[in-house]
Image (cartoon, rainbow over all chains, first blue to last red; front, side, top):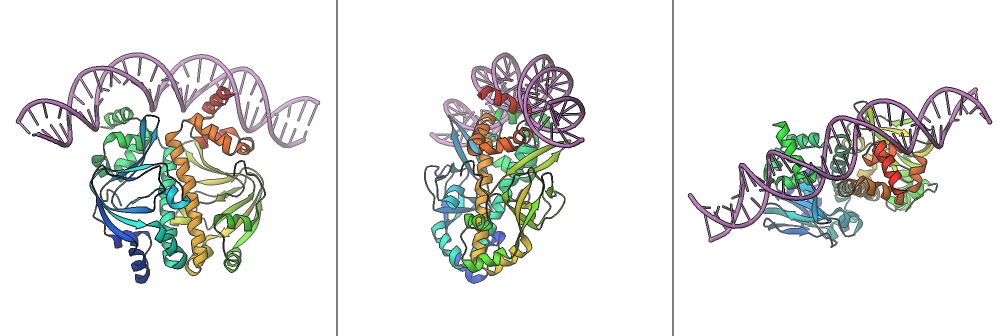
Length: 194
Length: 194
DNA sequence: GGGAAAATTTTACAAATGATAAAAAATGAG
DNA sequence: CTCATTTTTTATCATTTGTAAAATTTTCCC
């Protein structure tokens, strides 16, 4: 799904995770509402246990944490990705991250208290939740391994390959932090590979 | 569970992931068999789609990949952890990693073809599978964030805190690689904090 | 226990990355 | 469009980390 950038509707988003029978899907959609927020809005807070997760219909967001006086961006997501505090969702604890919207966003908000109840009562939704976690896991593992195996230059080139649009839509300071390097280092890399 | 090192039985291992009603647990245990392998055994292969995952009753193992002529260790696990090729388990594709046993091991082998069938037919097992993926996800995310936020020295100290026994049981070359640094760097860190 | 092999530490030097500051370019509000 | 602000690039120097090789320590097999 390279450079993917279409407007996603909720059925497509849910089906991409795990196809649900109609009755289960309708049940799940009862706990989902469409919302819009403007660029700059802080959607999730590190000091709070969050009870919602958000599927991105349109827009870009980033999760970041404060280390001393500098921000570290450790996640950037766009259309068809999920804004979530894993610590809140999985362990019911405060997360590490604030999440800030980098563009005006259209989102689908899913209440996770409702979702937990559905998991206990609907096997299809339980398997949807299983696939959701599994797919997030693969993505996270890939980033961790990439971090260990590839140099910063290789990681930047991979991002350029997979999501060329992100590099245009997100300022380079955030991209650099996401790649685990300084903005100055990223500038050097960009100058070299031209 | 700091420095945890008890012998785990299968009921304890399964319950720690998600408590199952007796009938579901018995169903799941039908697909699990106890196995033993000696130190040095290669349990999983990078070039193969694996159909088993292994819970560690006793022992230590590592997952590693070859970059050029050097091995990179990106996972080390001990009692109560799971040896798994996520790529095989989740995406039915070849993984990145070989898995080598670093001690004589007692393992519980779970057939994942059976497991997939159980997911479709038993809601409790589906939720067990969901919790399993979620807990692996939290661990992987924590490592990724630690990588981004902490220095190598801080990561070594954290490992020393969380799993002092691992540092005694696993040779430092593997620990260094797991922490994302060279063995020489780790030696320098160890010399400094003494 | 002795000796060979493997693992770890130390040293010296090279390369990569970071910090800081300043210049250049891009963006956005009026 | 213009000016102020923000973002990105460039330059310099300091620090960290890597590479290679030698020295030391530990492990393990006979």
